[in-house]
Length: 122
Image (cartoon, rainbow, N blue to C red; front, side):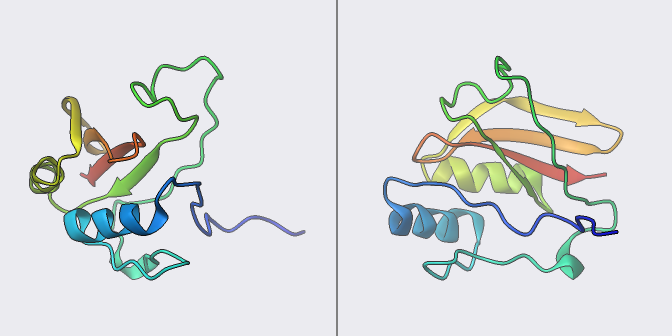
């Protein structure tokens, strides 16, 4: 029987794709190649890392303050360090770091108002 094996990519519209790609490259260390963005190899994901696919209720406030109907979650190796870089790059930090048994989380808005969740696995 045919089955899904994982997430093959995240694709979204951008007002200024090259400019936004350059921002992610400078402040988050993506190696952005237009028009296809960047690729993350499975061997670079930490042992406790994984990909989540989760539909949320239409009236969720979890993506706030972004007005977009989606949110990115990126796996990082140094949550505080990455949030500092984002702030240095004029990203907007949202809330406080939260810690759970499966890792630590922080959030920001990118220059186009997309909410991004950073996850440092436990």
